[in-house]
Length: 281
Image (cartoon, rainbow, N blue to C red; front, side, top):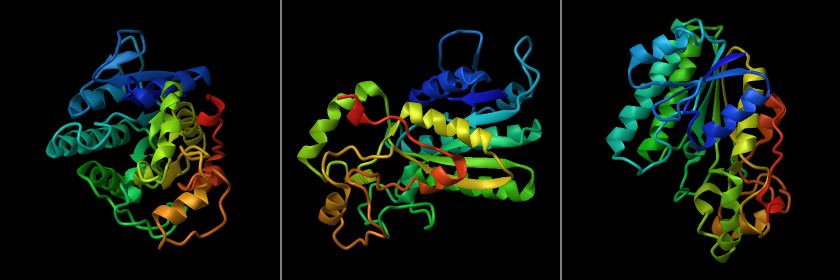
């Protein structure tokens, strides 16, 4: 496929760019920052004209794309003032979604977030493992935008029955060099309770993007994308019982199994994590 990737210069974006190109796709990196190369197009995603133009075609580069992968955003709460997070992320996502539709693109995969599940879980989750079945619980401006983006995608798919939008609710993205810090998490089980001790290797995040592109079908779907295990050496069930004693465990979980359920992604996308921090230390 010919793919427009926003945010290809970011942490997850770099892995996605390399993975999709290795799979044989042509990928254009639309980002505000990045090194000059034949696949990079400096684009202000808050400017609808630039987005629409970049998706419709660029002289000497491409004459249109088959799919859009939208990862670009202020990537976490607190990095800039709340209003700046809202203005940048909401506007950029609207521009990308609408620009894609106007350009005739019917396949969109984008980065939603685990934060819509209720992070940092100061209010305990309704049950564990958490999944996509309960209503969103945004607890920050960043998370609120992610929720609103999902709602916007639902309505755009209602307007356009041929449109496919896959929202990947990524967990905390990690590169292999980040794993050296993981053993220190064991000192305090509450230190990482904010996302149920979850993470996602960037390489597996890239796999999830590719699989979502390949499995795209009309309509909107949201998927939790996490590693198969937690960041902790302790048993997952013990962690849940200690930190969330009043929250029910809906099923038996494996020794170090993720408490961010990836069952839906496994079932509908064929997603299967290949990387664990335990293999790197």
